[in-house]
Image 1 (cartoon, helix red, strand yellow):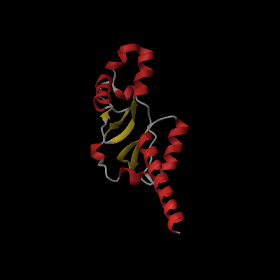
Image 2 (image 1 turned 60 degrees about the vertical axis):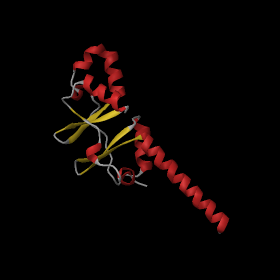
Image 3 (image 1 turned 45 degrees about the horizontal axis):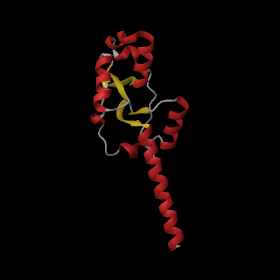
Image 4 (image 1 turned 90 degrees about the vertical axis):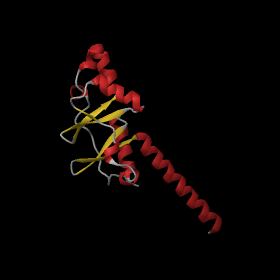
Amino acid sequence: MDIAQIIANRSASEVISCEVSTLVRDAVAILAEKRIGALPVMEGGRVAGIFSERDVIYRLREEGDACLGRQVGQVMTAPAITVTPSTSVVEALSLMTSRRFRHLPVVENGDMRGFVSIGDLVKSRLDEVQHEAEAMREYITHG
């Protein structure tokens, strides 16, 4: 299975994102309101980085609440590590595990096509394994 199958029924325009000029306090409000862990950060229609809960925590530790008045572009994780729609779920999971992050922008020809979380990828793998197990049971039962 590849990332394209996970984002097939999603519109890239529905991805919640922010701009590099967004204030950290406003981006934090978006994370809290939408109950999400990260936002792709856009600049000129392209993914410039990722702003996550971890970015907030690290900056709060370093700067205190002064970081809330900074622009997201100053505190985001950049450059963003991205995948393409043709990236396999297993490859994306491996990348997330080795790099220790939980969100990936899906980019094709420079344009964002979607945004996936580790939860999306784990769910797809579990669904795939369950489907394979059902097919095996059916094969064994009905030969």
